Image (tube, rainbow, N blue to C red; front, side, top):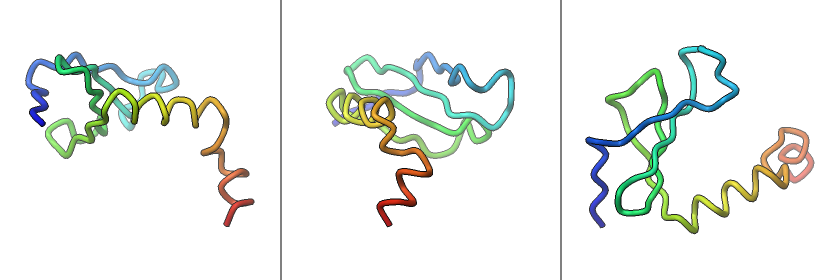
Length: 74
């Protein structure tokens, strides 16, 4: 799988409010979605398929990753 991130249009999460320690996301030309730490723009990038990204977003919307939910399941 080829994931060209050189021309990615990175966007910070809306909850950043100008902070430097944020998550950035970019749709890629091949349909995948890239994710990186805004503090390390030359650092590692995670790349997700559209179905993986959709599952993650659905989990966030269902509050599966809230700290209370995670603590209750451990």
